[in-house]
Image 1 (cartoon, helix red, strand yellow):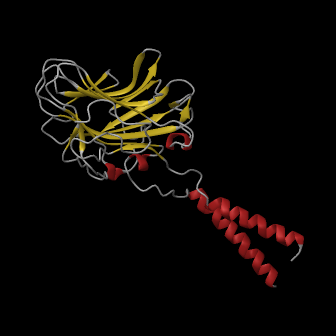
Image 2 (image 1 turned 60 degrees about the horizontal axis):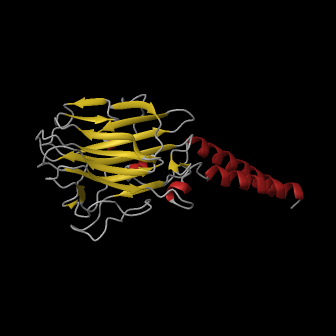
Image 3 (image 1 turned 45 degrees about the vertical axis):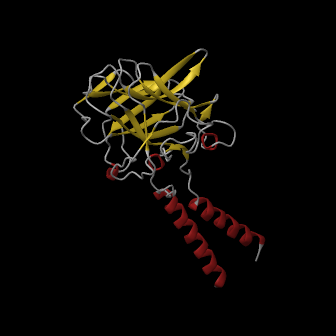
Length: 292
């Protein structure tokens, strides 16, 4: 075989390999399914976190929840009733070198939110009863700046029990009552050089696949700084409460599929198949020519 022929074969082979290599691989950043026994010694399971949950470990209820199309495991988190003070659980995400977040390329300045990246998050939430007792459950993605904890995206159930709010500004009425199953929240954050775009869907039908904010109107849409380093669960201030704030099945990933617990297998795009077909055709023509 001549040098020219050898070079041709090498180039065709390299083209075939490159064509069949996915451009990006889905990555799970963090996952907490509250797969703990009741009264555990510590709340330190899951993946993608730098340590255990802060707060009382007596915060696991049974059974865990399910939602159509969403993988579910373990029990669920709840915040005790009967206290008049804020009850907060926080957990830092692992953003160090070699962490899932670092390997996914979403870390910037010690926080999740590198420009030109996308992060998806999903979780289940519920307030236990309809009593308007001055307390409300909320989940927030936050950060600690100087001496104050700064919440980014916050999902909160009003003490009046007739709506969920997202970001503390937009109210959603008559979407779910507390006698119905828990609410499924799906969030997409597109990080940019300026303010970041955040879209939230409530009770998204997972059988429809990935939602498009332009085609599938979100229940909440906004633009703000969305960098964060921790997950916060809180039960708000008020009188002695008979209610509970409950959460389950938290996932955060770089793709929709991973954020809802679907397969992580990367699927080549149509253009990838075209490149692969051209490479195979070229290689076949070369072999045929050599045989003549």
